[in-house]
Structures are given as structure tokens and as C-alpha cells.
Image 1 (tube, rainbow, N blue to C red):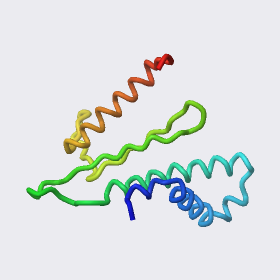
Image 2 (cartoon, rainbow, N blue to C red):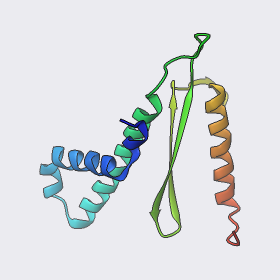
Image 3 (cartoon, rainbow, N blue to C red):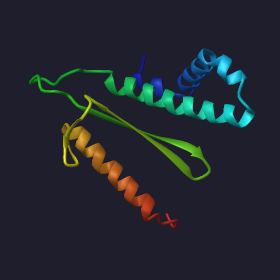
Length: 128
């Protein structure tokens, strides 16, 4: 199986359906708006879990035995012009305090990219 298949529509839909079935008794007691909110929450949860699984698949170390870090960023259409960003890091980054984290080069690059994306949202240019 291609690890990228974990983030495909059918895989995400199956994960959400499993969560809905597991919580069916709660879902049935909810109003339609609450059901929609719950399904969206479970979709976000499913994407987070599947992204982590996708990120963790593959080699667990490099040739020299040092940690082979990963950062997986998933950009998902949220409707209209909105985009939801999901990010997963493996191995988990360690908080060193003072706003600093211990991360691999790939994770640092992903954090910088996420910072740039956040900056673009703050200074969005609608001409592109």
C-alpha cells in the first residue's frame, strides 16, 4: 500500500465513518447542527491520526543511525477559499523551554514553512 493512500478521500471517509459508528449512540442524541460539528471534529481527528501514521511510515533511521526526522504537512480544502493546515512531526519534537524546541532539519524546515504560511495569511494578497 502506498502510504499516501492513508490521506486519500476514501481513507479519511472510512476513518470518520468508524468514529461515527463508534459514537453512534451519542450522535443519534444530537441536534443536526451538533451532528455536523461532531462529524467535522471527527474528520479533523481522523486527518490528524492518518497524517501521523503517514508521517511515521518508512525508514526509522538514517544510514549513520541518527534519527531520521519527518514533518508531514497536509493542506486540505475547507470550502470556498478556506484551507485547513495539518502538521505532524516524527519523532515528536522536545520542548526545551523559552520558545525553543529540539527538532531535526526536516522538522525545522517545516516549522519555517508553517511560519511563512501563517505570515501569508496575515498579509494575504488577493491578486495572485
